Length: 395
Ligand code: C2E
Ligand code: MG
Ligand code: MG
Picture 1 (tube, protein in one colour):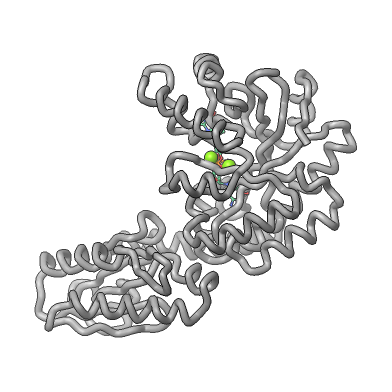
Picture 2 (spheres, rainbow, N blue to C red; picture 1 turned 180 degrees about the vertical axis):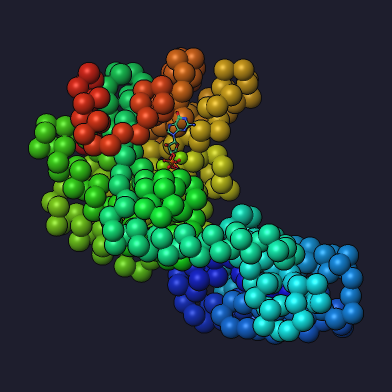
């Protein structure tokens, strides 16, 4: 039994409208029909979930069908002249190994599918008993996350950004931390994907936004006039109430909007038209936009040109081996040149050594961020740390 769910279908639905989503589902169903053999039956469970039952088969044949489905369904769909890509995540349970009744088999296939979503997406996986533990873990973390919001278990830490030429502080990135009473400290790389999956990222993201604006004011009152960059999740970016909530918080805190920077990733451009609209609205509000983790996604140069970002953050992976890797050095040199041409300032992430700094300066990277200067710090420690540095604010 295959349990199939489309990745990011909600996003398609929310951003293009339901009739667009319906057409996509029909196209997916057609593709499924064309590849499923005669001993298979396809059912639509609801939403973007499908079940396929394959009778009298072998593990090997099951596996090859799963591979084929992943491949075929991941090909782009053209709907009303727009090209859209969605990948399927598939969980598979086997009768009678995993269960003998429908309910158990569906539940196990669903568990396996959920596991795929958490780690890879666009993939398939057979159910294993060991998965049970993991998905229970997710359920527990989800409820802890909900509690965490109510019980103020979240806080922000701030990592300084240093101008490479003047050696002054030019900004700080706000990074979210969660010390859960149930689970202890949990890394954002673990809880943010889950919060995205469950939608909790919307209230969490609003909290981050408001907290950062409050910090801008608090620092300003201490004489520290610095922009703060927050990270946006794709789900927030596509949320219908996103722009109004930004406007509301800026109004409420009365900050200079150019002190608020938003870091987005290349994947935000999944729906070009919609992304352009949101970015334009953000520009009108006056906030600055940075493209985060640059070089790890699938962004095309035309996106860079069209969206006219203010900052380009070079992903840590390019910095890590900079000392011994000539290819990485060439990459940095190309990226900074490219950014200059598009009128963007470059920020290097994960700057850990003096050698990194020297090389990044050589390739004319504008701004440095990383452990070499400081770890992300709670506000009071940041204030302390900053005393040995001069501040330079570009407004
Ligand atoms: P990111 O935005 O690329 O943030 C940079 C990450 O690199 C941070 O990890 C930071 O602590 C770490 N880092 C900074 N300097 C160095 C260094 O010199 N060396 C190394 N190895 N690492 C360094 P962190 O705080 O664990 O955050 C991980 C990711 O979680 C962030 O990546 C961001 O994508 C996401 N995230 C964090 N806070 C938020 C948030 O408030 N909202 C959303 N949507 N995502 C967030
Ligand atoms: Mg970031
Ligand atoms: Mg980054």
